[in-house]
Image (cartoon, helix red, strand yellow):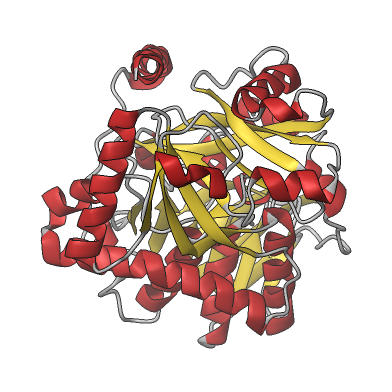
Length: 446
């Protein structure tokens, strides 16, 4: 399991893991069990679906190969932002403007759902309002403002457009030439939120099992999952199955769903976090404490935390190899944005893998029936492409609706077409590395 083994090493110096107390572990699945819906993956998509399904009266079992929130759900930048990872024109070209407006509205519903779950379940996860999108050149600032104007005119979603002369009120950095601000988006502590969602699911009656690897999927009228754990094996029979392991679903051999693996690629993302800063310093860096993200293809994203640190992400690896001198390289990127932090110590540096699709649009759907005319009872959620903190929650709701008999909203996403990455299993990673080198060069040239 090379992906999981590589990822395990990246968890060891995570700010999130150091600041999110873990409750008692959930036991592995042993022996034989039955349920209405089996969920594979203990991240935000799987937990959201499990909670929604249980609230609809389904008997639900969730399997997690490591521990709840082990993957990207517990290690990401913590930014919950409107929209999708792809531009809206990708959706417009495939589905038309009316359906693109529907998709956009659902992305905003995802933000409301996130806030609602925090309130309903009393999840203490350091939620903070505000998102600032910034541009590094005048040309990119003009494009950012034009995009914001179109979002307001076509989608009815207003964003405050900020000129270069006004940026000093928003961010203490000379690097940027323009920005937009969204008070409805925001940021949180993702591991606290993920564990809080798991606790809510358990209270609702979802049976959660950690340390349980789904090792084989046997399709049919009642699909069966074979499982392995340190304590022994098991089998789980279900009426329906949800595959929500994202990058980790395809990081095991053999993969549970080989036909899905070619449509996503695992990409390593990396974050550093400073020591605690004086509160006045943290307040001065980003006065309204918004999350910040630039518009480069290979982007930087950052925010101040509830305990007054700077959390900074800005490295990616398309080869699954962790960058050398990770903490120092991220510190240099941070100081390039905030020279005033040159003396701040980087206390944590960690990473993880997200799955990206070719067009950066989410990939939701069902596997074909095992036999002609049989039920399409294995669903999947993948391809959030680094923009899933809020959208995973909505995805869980949509798949629960579909499993309950109303697939009208789920099928909007299922109609999106996805191409496999070129090059086959051996050449697609080198091809992607070369492609991303080109985009990095474009970012550098402005």
